[in-house]
Image 1 (tube, rainbow, N blue to C red):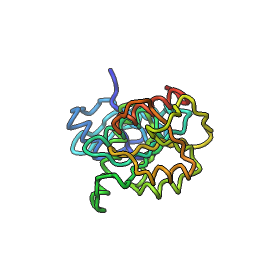
Image 2: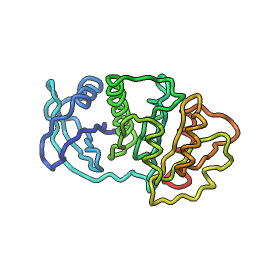
Image 3: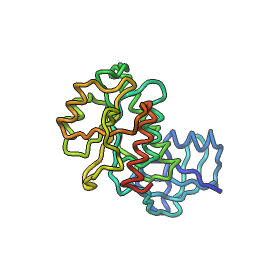
Image 4: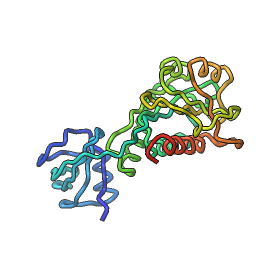
Length: 242
């Protein structure tokens, strides 16, 4: 029987009892209807996981730690994604799949052709929603490290701050394929993906001025969420652990 995994930011210590956060407690007690005595795996987001037993299922969820172990499902490729905000649930899908495919950092971006306008209150809500998606993807995929979600920022600011990384810009006008790249694996590799309408020409030129390399996924134009999934898969297969 598969044991449910949940994330809880805490210090895992053998034989101690911890109170799970509200999201984890709701999922275990209300959705899965687990009871006292049931087993649950709890990970701390820093590579540690514990096999635990539910000891309190009344209103709050408390578990006792039985065994602690280290989980290493991380790729040797330090891969990140910089995705311009997309409409509807497309951004949620991209973040979920990026986590499953092993990214370490997620950079949500605004750009000139991004049609999503957010005030400060909605930005906070988006960040919270994105983090919950990241946690859920880690719980499902067996990752014990939580990728870092960066604050939503403007494309130009992001480019100027990350010129020392391996910047890979999806550009259908280019001919270079991912399999032909020679990456410095000691650096962070950041895949940059524009919005549904593509990046503005000035943004593309700015990226190239900051050492971004334009890459192509072939002759067909892919949707932004499809492009992310395909490119991350190829990068993981060519340079990582897929």
